[in-house]
Image 1 (cartoon, rainbow, N blue to C red):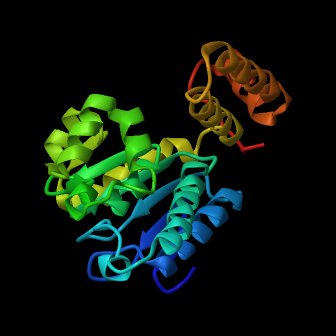
Image 2: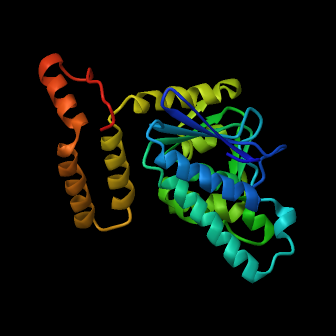
Image 3: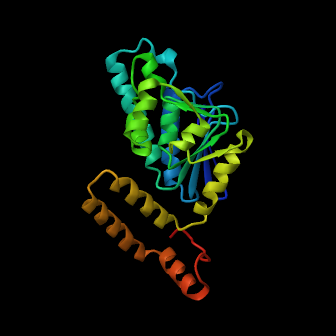
Length: 259
């Protein structure tokens, strides 16, 4: 896709690879390329699920502080908007998305992972929001997505202290969904999304949108979002194939086309 972001596709799974050695620090160019990769992954029908991966050594160790140290308020007002927009594009990919975390996922790097639906971390991974140690706060979704994921008290501990969490603690508080051996992180993420790649794409998209949008509204509105999404799926080929297969062969044996 670009100099720092690669997008590969195999067997219905798209892999967005962060590739800015040594630690995949987020600068303006990487952020723009990541946004484009998220758009492409959203639009490509052959992509049914997505893995975001930083390679074998490091997921992303945050923003490039050298670029930010002397930045002005007007400059950062624009840049933070661009960062949040990119994270929003990742979160808005209408397909299951898993972040495969090796090494460090800190600051903006963790915010990239927070925009995914699931997170798989290596046993040696380290995660955190260390912005407070620099005299600022997370600016690309860390205060909002983290608190929604692990609850406000745990999020405040992580953000207020700026401390780095080991993978086991991140798993214990619900920040990480699965911990795998360091050399098996990508494979573990692949195993997690393979069933989704073979699933009913339109139903998965509807489920993701209903859950994500429902969290932002009151219960009655959330239920209406669910009802509309549910009813709309009765206009799809996958619904007919799934229910016909259930009646003829029992559950879990349908073949879906994503239409």
